[in-house]
Every structure is written in structure tokens, then in C-alpha cells.
Image (tube, rainbow, N blue to C red; front, top):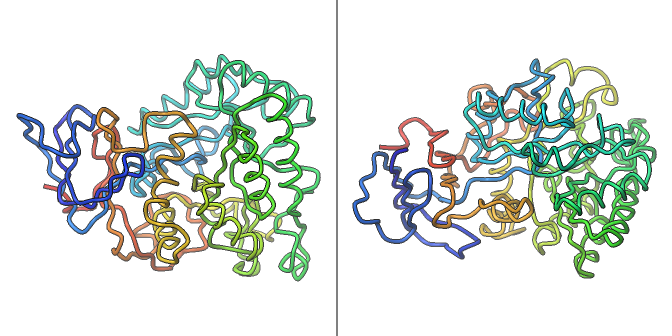
Length: 430
């Protein structure tokens, strides 16, 4: 490993309450100092971060990389390059791969694919039930021992509340994080848009807010019953924020995230028949967006995720309800977070914390901070650099983004993962 010096940058680290110009000294993959130069330090690589922000590498709590099983859409190699270019140094992989992450063999396969892609910091989320069918519990302890960081249901329903209760009791007994995406499958009724004006106007099958909030309320009751530590993923509506706020007020061990696009887009932004806006949960109302933003600012919603779901062209062809849901979104997380800062929704420190320290706290990993002794996971970005979303700038194989052709402000110039420079804009280091 080489010694690396990052100098002249604006260091922002919410955990250690750092917001100042300074240097970071890296040796043997670790941060060795953020103040004074260590004795005998002779950097082989120097990164001049003048006029740039230096912060911990981003941690994404919900991604799909399409391997194993759907490599025609994307691969570990293509999507980890997209992640590196976006400043993301740690990825949590949802269990709805093919085969499903419900055996140690599949968890080992994930680790092998990550190693081949030269991006080792990928944490598989184990399937809550076998084949994600919601009927028979997976072998959670064995999956934890195989490297799974949590258990979850992805977008799949749990068939009955007794199964959900037993799963939570099992997770408690093995100190496993339970990641739950609240969605009542039957109320959702295979909908593709929010039950509101847009769906009514175009005659689309719709998903009411209650599909999320009823599933959330049921799970919160079981959290109180079992004492399980639960992270609610990809929330989208006003009443979800209220329920999480109340649960935290009463001392339940819960946390929550929101996909970045839910903080910017609503049903009013959907271009008719453009399936790039087809996501789950669906884009909801202006009031829902307002509450999600307030929840993020207050800390009720503590993390932002990409909910990255790359698709090939075929998956997004056809009538809106017939297309596959999901957005390719890793590369737009930073500029959209910076837009929240520029609009006064959150401070820069809050925005960075929602992508670093807070997800690390949810996962209970030593990351998300510029702490001496931690792995040197570092993101350097230029908050003023403008770029256009186009074929030249885009790294992901999935081009299914509603932001295609738009110009953003804020771009990553360097990404270090465990002291290794995994992304660099040409000419950016000495």
C-alpha cells in the first residue's frame, strides 16, 4: 500500500465535527492523521483538493447490481465503476438476485464477484425467507456467518404476520439488523403509480399511501413486541414520517432511509408514458415530498440511499404498467444531495451525514468518518463543477434515468476505498 496525502481540501466529517481546510494522511489503507504530518511520512501520491470538499466515502443502503442472474442489464464491474465515480465506497446489495441470497453459497458468490470487480466493500443483505416467498424463514445465522450484514425482504411480501414475528425474533436472537421495505402487496394490487391525480388521469393501476403505512404500522407493533432492531427502507409518504417519528419518541430501535429521487420528484413531474418514472414505491404528492424533506432535516429519516436499479432498454419498453420499476440512480445522488443543500432543506453537514455517518451507524460498521485508524474510505468532490448526464459521462450500464440530458452541479473527482484510489478524473492527482 502507498502513502497518500490529500491536501488543501475543505474537510467535512460530521462524526468528528470537522469542517475546516486541512490534510488527510493515509498509510497502509488507514487514515493515520487529519491534523499533523506523521513523522517520516513520504507520500507517493498527492491529491490537491483545493476548492473541493473532502468527506468520508458514501455508504449506499440499497442497490441492485444485476449480478448474479441478470448480467444482460448490468454487471458488478459496470456498476461498481458507477459507484466509484459517484463517491460511493460501500454498497448494500438487496437479496432479490437470481439465485436469491438465501444460502451461504450465494453469499460467497457475491463476495467472489466483488473481489473480481476489485470493489470488495459490498455487503449482501440476506433474504428474510427462502426464495423471498414469505413462507419459510431462511437460515439467518448461517447467512450472517457467511458475511451478510442484515436480513431483508427487498420488495417481496411476507405472507403473514406470524412469519414476520418469528423472523424478527430470530433476528433479535442473533443480533441481526432487520431491513424492511414496508409494502402491503395486496393493497398495492400490482399498481405502478401513486393513487392520485396522475394515475386517475391516465387510467393507471395505482398504489395507495396505505399500502406503505399499514405495513409500516404492523411492523412497528412487532418491533415493540420483539425488541427487534429494524431499518425501514425507501419510505415515500407523509404518514410514514409521522409514524417513524412517534416510534423513535417511544424508544423503539428503528431507523429509516429515503431514495434520493423521492426528495425531488413527485407524480406531477412524471412525463406521460415515460417509464423512467416508474419506480417502487411510486412518486407521490408534493405534500409527501415536503414531509420526507422535513423528516430528513429533523433526523427522523436519517439516511439517503440511491435505490439503484439499472435496467436494459427492453425492461423499460411498452406501456407504463408493463415496464419494470426502478431507476439507475447512483451517479445522481451527490448532485441531488447538493441541490437539497442549495435549496436550504439541509446543511452540507447534514447532507453528508445522511450518506456517510448515519448509514454506518445503521449497519454498525467502522466507516463513514475520517477517524484515525479507520479504513481510508474518502470522497473528494467539486461542489461547483457542472456536468451533463449523457453517454460520455454516464458509467452505469443502466440508462434508465429521468435526468438524461440534464445538467447537474457537483461532481466527484477522487474516490478512495481502503486507501486505494478507485476513481480519479484525469489529471486530478500528482
